[in-house]
Structure formats: C-alpha cells, structure tokens
Length: 209
Ligand SMILES: Cc1cc2nc3c(=O)[nH]c(=O)nc-3n(C[C@H](O)[C@H](O)[C@H](O)COP(=O)(O)O)c2cc1C
Ligand SMILES: [Mn+2]
Image 1 (cartoon, helix red, strand yellow):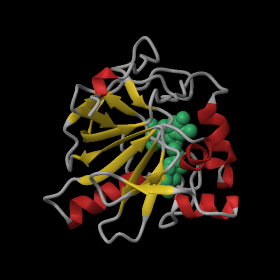
Image 2 (cartoon, protein in one colour; image 1 turned 90 degrees about the horizontal axis):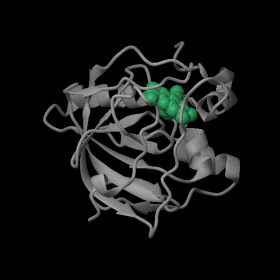
Image 3 (cartoon, helix red, strand yellow; image 1 turned 180 degrees about the horizontal axis):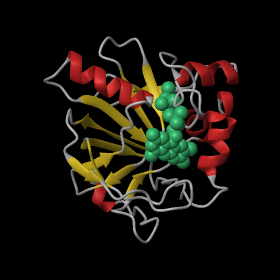
Image 4 (cartoon, helix red, strand yellow; image 1 turned 180 degrees about the vertical axis):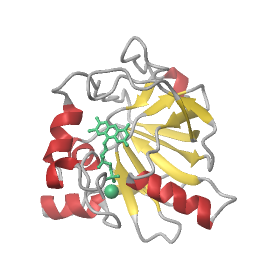
C-alpha cells in the first residue's frame, strides 16, 4: 500500500499548522444504525505516516454522527473515508442539505441516475467509483490531537490550533498517477464561498439550526 507520506501534499498557507490532506475531498461517515451516510467536506491535516487530524465541528453532520458514535458504541471509533476527486460529489459535499438525508441520493436525484459507487476495501461503506484516492480508517472518540491553525475562508488565519479527533489511516487505494485536488481557502472568492452559497438558504441552513 502506498503510504500517505509519499503523496506530495502541498503546504497551503505560510502559517498553517501542517499540510492539509483534505481540502476538497469528501469525508464519508455512517450512523451506528446504518440509516444515514453523510458525505461532507471538512479540512483534515496530515500528522505523520499513520495519522491525520480533522476539524470536527459539532453542529456539522460529521460532528453529529461522531457524537452518536461516542454515545452508542463507546469502544469503537467511527469509520470514515476521504476521497479527493469528482466534481459533482465535491459540490454536494460542500453544501448543507438536511440531516438524515444522504448526499449520494441528492446527487442521484439531480443527475437523474445513481452515483456509481464501489465498496471500500476495509470498511462497510460505499465510495464513488470516480474517486482518485480513497483513504480509509477510524476516527478517535476523543479530541486527542492538535489541529490547525489554517488559513480560513474569510481570508484570515484561524484562531490558533485546537484539539480534534485523530483520523487513523488504515487503507489507501488510488488510481495510477492520481490527481489530488485542493481548494486553497483565502480571501473571497474561492471555491468554499461559491460552493457554500449554492446550497439551500445560502449555505447556512444547518449552522443556524
Ligand atoms: C472547500 C471547502 C472547505 C470546507 N471546510 C470546512 C471545514 O474545514 N469544516 C467545516 O465544518 N466545514 C467546512 N466546509 C463547509 C462544509 O462542507 C459545509 O458546511 C457542508 O454543508 C457540510 O456538510 P454537512 O451539511 O453534511 O454537515 C467547507 C466547504 C468547502 C466548499
Ligand atoms: Mn449532510
């Protein structure tokens, strides 16, 4: 298996806390009862050859599902996959659709046909067949790793670093010569602004709930 340290992950802003492996990829997580699979974009920083650390905001769907894992299966960290690649998937992963709705269903409805998916290697999750790179693993049940700072979408450096859950890297699969897409957040306008604004209610539906 190719190791994460062998991918040339760029350093995005000069005061970032590290190299950000995920800026435009989709994080795929599932509720413990298996009824809701959420696809979303959130930043994830590479830590070393086996670990990344992701910003898990409690109000975001990934944060809601992460909390369910703490409550329901205390012994087991939540599975995740991350996949840079595929424009339609990234677009819907970056906009807020309602809780308990699968982004894959939303894309399929818009496109008029299902998103082609394949099984992940080590987890019971489906990933888009168009993915360039798929990183599989588990997320810590504690905020046990320092994340950030990171150049924010407002064009400023975020408020220092904070403790966030570790993303343990377990399996990596990829195409030959994979493309590792990025969005470098900065002063408006970058992809984070245009994409979020396309969402329902201008992108803030869930954050204001
Ligand atoms: C390029 C880009 C980067 C983003 N980074 C983050 C992030 O680091 N953390 C976060 O909570 N949301 C981030 N967002 C916003 C979320 O993707 C957006 O709120 C989305 O609705 C979250 O998915 P959810 O509705 O399934 O929770 C980013 C969006 C884009 C387009
Ligand atoms: Mn969602």
